[in-house]
Length: 360
Image (cartoon, rainbow, N blue to C red; front, side, top):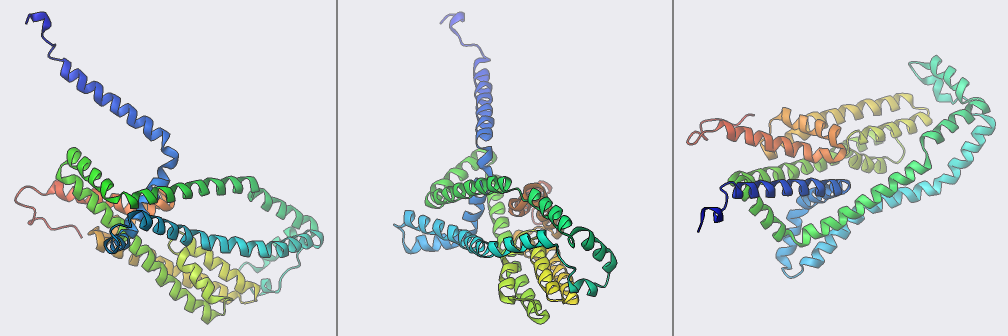
């Protein structure tokens, strides 16, 4: 072989760099194309992780029922979400006529000052003046309702509902494939993690899954507890439909600031009945319960499942919600748990792993 026939020494390195560059560009392109559907993928993963113990028990009992089990669980998840939504829409449709008649009368005659305003302990005069200027006359009522319609633009609401419906449908579709092909997906993720990160890859995945399950347990258990406590408060203070509001509170407590909205509704009902003191009590007791649950009980439950210090659980929950919305409620603690685990492993040297205590 002549000298001219020998390959250049830099050829393998150049080929490797070209492959990495092409892979990186394709990965960025794929991420850009799938960007709209990333929340759906993340939600499907969170739901699959949460229900995996139940899923595996069903698979153990019916080993050959992989497809129909995945279908049944997906339909169950859809029903859990859609049935309450459908019930709320049906109830709203029933009351829409009464609300429309009330608004028409208010715009024609104005809204008289209600009796409960005289019982307001603070700001009574300011509230009275505002009501007289903005709602007591037909002109003021028309102006206020016009502004309300501008805020609640039906086109924006319709677009938002359509977008969320598409996201939810894609989430269900993704969930079905995650459940049906569970073993294959896990095997691929383990192989990829081992090739990229070595033994650390599997530990990162286990810690993230443990954190997501701990977060879900904390959300569900704390939400049920808040609903039970507030149901008793609603009964004692005479709030209409206390059991219904208690159930709604339990669900809303799993959503950041959701329970506070239910407290406001309960307070408004009490004010309409003339019980201003009861409305104030509902708001104060409710906010205290939510504060204790969200800042003490929930972080302890999540931190206990993930060995994550209290401060980092709180940062993961609040920072995740602020950054990613409701999805951040699960992603935030999982991210903090992985980071703290990597930090602990970084501090540990071979042979000294047991000498360095875990941070508490």
